[in-house]
Length: 380
Image (cartoon, rainbow, N blue to C red):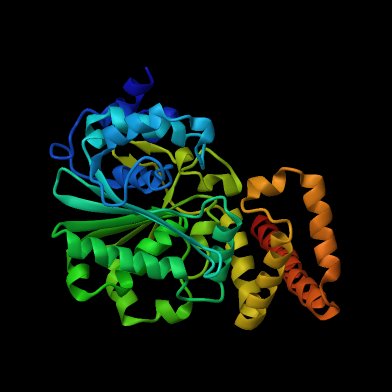
């Protein structure tokens, strides 16, 4: 019944990527061409736990990978999102995705470089390659690198993303599609901006699925302005991550059944047929948060941003936790460690952190009252 409503186009009973695979999973890419929903699914593919499933230079079908996954003990694998457990075999069992071939899985983590990077390439039946860049995982290192974007324009994972693109372009003559979710979408755009001319000419599309933008020094480059015509950016109606920093490309607003920050979960994005359910614009809440964060960043110079972020993560690192799950475990002990570490910070740095946070709270408060004044004016 769900599938029937999906095919008939009943918007009251919208679907997600699982329903799409039920509907189109038996049809090869050669009979039904690549679309934005295929992109979303492959952007999630790079989050799967490939470490013990595929060798770096092995070329293997997604069907075979999903079979290997099912033979593993899931409890011992680093699953980033519960729905990944279902999506992996669902892709493998389908003809559309199962016959695609994956290769060149890489995962580079470096505490010294503050880098969290991972990618995998998918060779498709239409003789194109989709390069899928992983977004932020649940490691503290990954989130630190994300925040580094607010004061750095060329972070290590972006540079690795560019090197990875050029490697694939040199190894294979195929036309290319690049994509990712969250930071992965940002890396896909970055790699395309700074790729060499021959590689750029082979890129068909770049997909940024709720990923952040860039600082002005990248936005203003000729390379950025040339590549954005190939970029498709999708954000949910309450988007926060996808509106961070600056975007000059057009974006498409997608309906999500989640609320607030949880709309970043791409499993909640709604679709009909081989397209998303589109909305005219983001919510007032998304605009409010976007305005508040941008105003806040404008008031804090780059050096202070870096100092504050470094101090906060020094405090977090004092717990010896590597992931946010580690922080939640033994939360009482970790809370004590965090508090003791904060006490050890010199007064000048404490003052800087408090001033930075106070500036954010003031901007949020001012924007809140301004929004309510505007609403009252409209009512009167």
